[in-house]
Amino acid sequence: MHVSRIGRLIVGIVVTAVGFTLVGPPATAQELVHTDQTGDIAKVLRNGTFLADPGRTYPDIVRTRFAHLDDDLVVRMSFRDLRRRGELNSFSMTVRRPDGRQRFFAWFGSSEGWGGGELITNVQRPCDAEISIDYRDDMVRMVVPRTCLNDPRWVRMSAEADLTFQNGTDFFDSATRGRMTNLKVGPFTRRLLPG
Image (cartoon, rainbow, N blue to C red):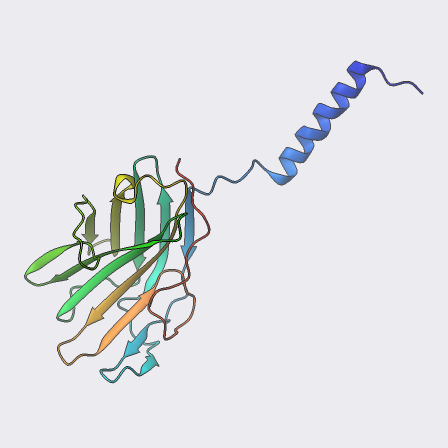
């Protein structure tokens, strides 16, 4: 049986359309939403001992949205119970670039106010990184301009929250880890492309 050229073209279009519908479009991973397990807060004692503290509600991260936009990297963390507690609160994000280098951005706050930006050794790099904290909606939003990272092709990110008391006891949660562990930086997201 002879199939005409137009018939083959129609069959090819139909097969491609069905395949595209079943598989979906190619993933451009510019955004990732991670739901975190509740009750996975780690308590770190002054001597470095890590203990699970499942009854604690803060700083328990419940959901995080990582986005690699055209101009900015944005991390938005939602908490179970975000409050002003302890002597020092901190929120941080770590960014891994294609060259393998990692950049660390952190914000620290207390009753006196907030400050922060990129934390690096020996070199202070100007950067308009910013944070907004909404205690009413239990949400923290961190924004880092892509220009601070030399406009990378892709990034992988992680984010954490810490609460420290004067006696040296520290409580933290990772946005990308679903269980308590003795590592403060959580696993990185998959590659996120700008877009």
